[in-house]
Length: 470
Image (cartoon, helix red, strand yellow):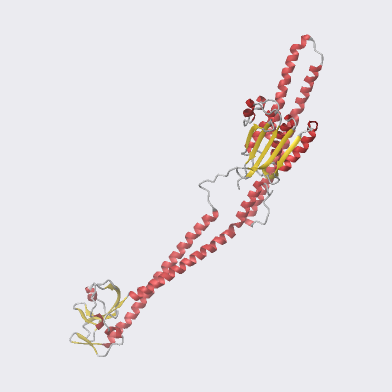
């Protein structure tokens, strides 16, 4: 039996794992973006606060006379006096442009000279970003003031290199995504094992159903969760009902067989009695007609036997199958045949592997082995041999070989008697009915049957059943 896997087959666990993984990555991704944005905004807000303090230091130390600014004391921040220190101070007026710059900014060239000409309201602060000619980023805070004369408006601006801030943001971003990635992997592993644990009852049910299919178990037993209990109970009820129905069909068909065979036997007996009585010459025509009726009764008997045997087959290697010992079945048939053919003193040889099991209905196996061995005993002269082993090609499955030293099956009838579904009313006496039934049963299990000439001189029949799909 082979199992076909459709392209649309999918795993419930895989679907849930993919769905939760997508949800997890979306959640962690959005969380990372929010934290990254919050940290960046926090860094920039901190930079603006520090620059605001530097602006106040410039205001506290600056003085103006005739439009020129000077400082009465050294600034408290020494970086204003160091060339290219990264902290720069400017005083400007929108109408006049730059009026003063700190010693640290003497060599600084801005990519946007109009930056210091932007009008800023009195008491307002403007935080922006800019670059120098070399492409370096700077944070700029400009603060508008009204001078002591109550007329002049100036802008005090402080500029600081943004490189250290961006470096801090980059380090935080690397650390953040590393931790989130690690957390994602950890959560995925936890989610995977929790999902396996949560779905384990379904996996156990699938294993139990396969054991029932192979014949190792009869029902779904065990402590299943409350959500699956209704399913398991209904499946057990279905299995039990199916088996009872099969048994009822077999019993009904067996009764039908007896019901039909009895009147046929009576009619046959009456005809034989009539034929046994002395007949006059004038009754020869009636004798001929009686012979024709007898032949037709024999054909009817063959048809009934053949069709009823076909009807009671289980016809499936997987439908509620059981493991059946092939050796035990052979021995059971052999015990009966020794009694039936005791007068022939047949020499029986065998090679039986006790580890070979048939996956299916025991009555089907009994029908196959019984028919084949009965033919071998019936038509043998002195010798019958039986071999039971695993299939050589697969190292599994079942291979049964039965051979005898009888006359064998005529070459012109070998192919016909093995045809699937050959009609009983066209079969010859002897091997025909039995082998046709055997062929139907073997084919229904997806097996193979081969008829050869035996080394013993008679017929050699090889029957092979595939191992059931796992």
